[in-house]
Image: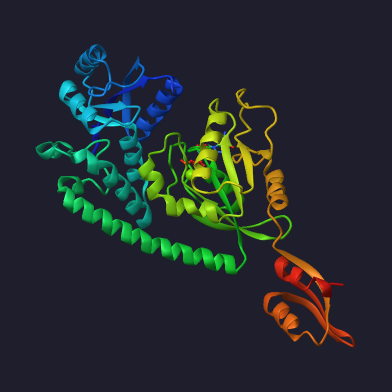
Length: 415
Ligand SMILES: Nc1nc2c(ncn2[C@@H]2O[C@H](COP(=O)(O)OP(=O)(O)OP(=O)(O)O)[C@@H](O)[C@H]2O)c(=O)[nH]1
Ligand SMILES: [Mg+2]
């Protein structure tokens, strides 16, 4: 006898899109399917319609909507997922017309983040993003709220809160923002300490599922969860790594990016994404076997610019080169390294590229400081690690490793 405990049937979903020609509708729908599967749905069909813009009231044209309704009825569909953001009006009208739950791409992504959030900070960030997205959508829905009783798009910490009134939600948003601000302060303190200890940080960013966590694990044995799933990582993880030239750096793994990342999510995750802003070097990891790879690199670059990282050195890491390289990629990409985080090839080149690109922060020099300059000797002693020192006739001789800026200040004493 077979016995299944708590076995839930996957929700059956239809994905709908309006093809306005603004972006590649097919590849966007394929990605939406992956997102839906990640959230636990089974995709039963696709409906797309070419239009100049989505219908203001119904999203699709009324004819296509009727077809969709028939499909939903014939296939016992639980949820319809739109590939763009729906206005509150569109969502309500579609639900009324179709008789099934209707959610949009943003709600789906927020839902996956809610499933994935582990740390306290991650959970607070997702809840904040959900509440901010849902708040304007509660207008005039009144009694309908109780319909949001489970399934994709309704999970996460925000779930029970949805039933309360807007004032309550606004208060909750304020509380969350305050708590997150506290956590951000603590994070900033840790960053300041790292800067004081002069540990340079290198941040791994890139499109979701590119292999960032796998790379982190291969380089540092960090044991970060790496999965063939979208948004496996939400919380940044930092691990120490020693470069071939002996320098110690801090490597940081971060949440993956995706095209048209919900704005509220970028806002909410700003403090964790700001790890990228504090870093000395950025590794933009991409899946070089994916035909969409050039687009993924671009999305990441744009988001980095939005976060204020423009001008920082970036190494484009073409990952998964154990698989055939996508023909969509140009032959030559500047400042790029080909690797496989899985089988380890190219990692030496990557470490060398990191060494070469990271500006040196410490150097070993020999100095002869005249006894008349007591403050120079004191400053060098305070900062540096002394390998050898001698009191000579013409001054204090130091064989010392110190900060390059400090050495520069007393350059005249270098011998
Ligand atoms: N063939 C191949 N697969 C890889 C390689 N690197 C990672 N993968 C696979 O790609 C999938 C995603 O890897 P992750 O390391 O979780 O990707 P990520 O970029 O951290 O993803 P998110 O945290 O979801 O943004 C996993 O199934 C990995 O095993 C590689 O070099 N070659
Ligand atoms: Mg990851």
